[in-house]
Length: 288
Ligand code: G1P
Image 1 (cartoon, helix red, strand yellow):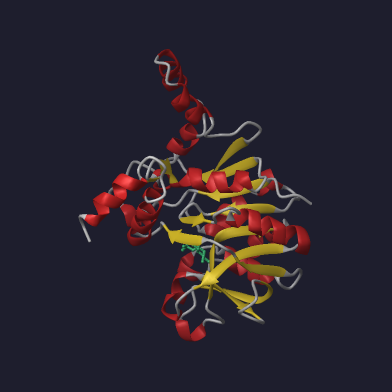
Image 2 (spheres, rainbow, N blue to C red):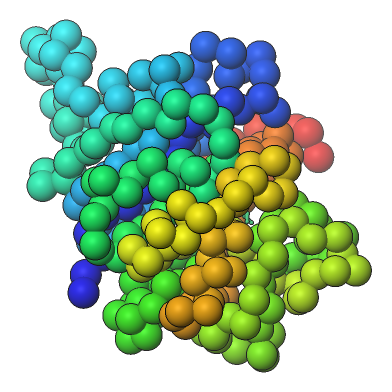
């Protein structure tokens, strides 16, 4: 059982970043010089995924264009002898990797978005990556670490991290036997609980490997937290049939769904950018 398909739910409206996201998808916002969605795609590809399924809406065409070839740009770079840039542009979608796009017709939440991909996944385990969560995993990306856990456990795997008690209402929160173990079976999961109702301090970040059983459970899932069809609620049901593991991954996660997290990620990635790091460090010194 290999994980070769990944779903990228990208139909969200990005209201937190208006007006920047009025005409541009939030997933196309750059961290330094690369759009958020490209980081998520690179993470998936590094983990061996070759089929990318984007769940989009009508205002997300820029994402399709980004992963398609751009004849005008490429021929102009070629004419001007800009071979490095040409190679970079052509390499956005690596050889052997394909994209499929499917529309989410109404904004009914993450669970609904994942269900939209059912016909393209069929009966295989698959990954889900939320581009808002940018994860710098270092040598081994978060998804690579998850694939290793999946290969051993043959069960669904969810990436989690320690969160502050006051933050539980922003996350799916898992119930586990031992919160100190890096990989552990989850006993329960709940979407955005109040701090006094949270089963632990382990919050779900936007990376999942799911078995296809999730689709029939999503079909039965009614609108939950925030009036949306929640993936978390279907995972809670999955626990009645299969084990699900939580992985406290190695790496740093930036919540690029918030302005503060987005700025933090921009600074962190600029400080390790090969061409920018030194000058940017000097620049920053002028502010602090
Ligand atoms: C979604 C999930 C939530 C998870 C979070 C991670 O929420 O529903 O369980 O913890 O992503 O980023 P959202 O942030 O889309 O509200």
